[in-house]
Amino acid sequence: MTSDSSPRLAEALAAGTVVLDGGMSNQLASAGHDLSDALWSARLLADRPDAVRDAHLAYFRAGADVAITASYQATFEGFARRGVTHGEAARLLALSVRLGRDAVARARAEGIVRPLWVAASVGPYGAMLADGSEYRGRYGLSVGELERFHQPRLEVLAAAGPDVLALETVPDAQEAAALLRGVRGLGVPAWLSYSVVGGRTRAGQPLADAFAPAADVDEVIAVGVNCCAPEDVAGAVEVAARVTGKPVVVYPNSGEVWDARARAWTGESTFTAGLVTGWRDAGARLIGGCCRVGPEAIAGIAAVV
Image 1 (tube, rainbow, N blue to C red):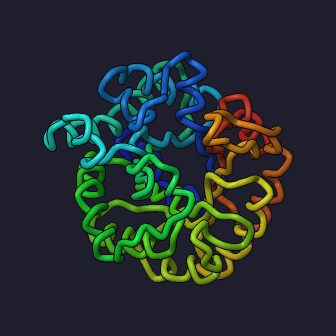
Image 2 (image 1 turned 45 degrees about the vertical axis):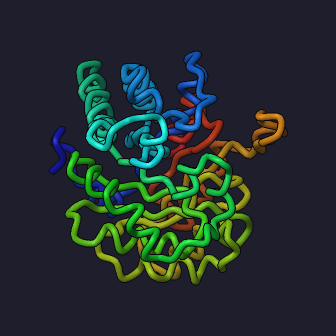
Image 3 (image 1 turned 180 degrees about the vertical axis):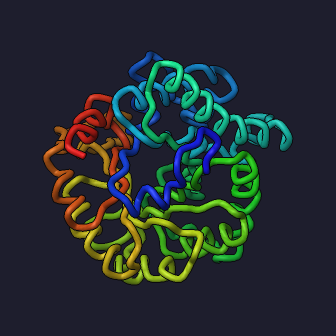
């Protein structure tokens, strides 16, 4: 059982559909916080931890069952560039999980009694670079080098006691291989979600090939996609379910497109709660949203589920 007496997430997935939260950055920006920093939302772990906790709580209030921590862009290397010591970086990583737990406690105090879980976000190597390479992959590093980058953070986050590790926005099957090695033996379940375009990873690998290695990793309780267009979800769900036999996790963006030069989102949202039924029928069991998907959209998903 988890620390708040919820059933284990894997058991819940066997029984039905679980609602994920929406974009952490979306909620923090809506609350007026400046995220124009290489550390992105991870900066607020040090500067405004209360804001991170409140963002989690807003999603619980909207109907989310899972809070994904603000550790996506939190790495030892990224913090070191800002003069943060290794020990302090480890404290901030662990704090990200504790803030999720604090939000669960506040939700309980408000009378929210459904099962709630905390997922520790493990973003890709490219997120630390803060140059958009998490949407390309192909970093020029070996699987072993990527494993050595991820392992210390995985160990600290696992020790902090999350319900699950969210290996998310992975652009490249090589990086997924490193992460899958890293979670073995940690004693914490994980999900693996790729960022995709069409039927391929961002690095160009076919999804059937990318998902296949996760089928044999006992620690992995779900596979799927996130930080992609809503239109790319349905096909990925079918492939993930067929190739791995595991529950599928999906949390796409709103459908708007990030213009890196203008540093602004363009286009219109194509994310609707009406898509959820199709995703669920295809095998999705963890459903939420990523960039530009806020509490209102999560409430819509919760209503459908």
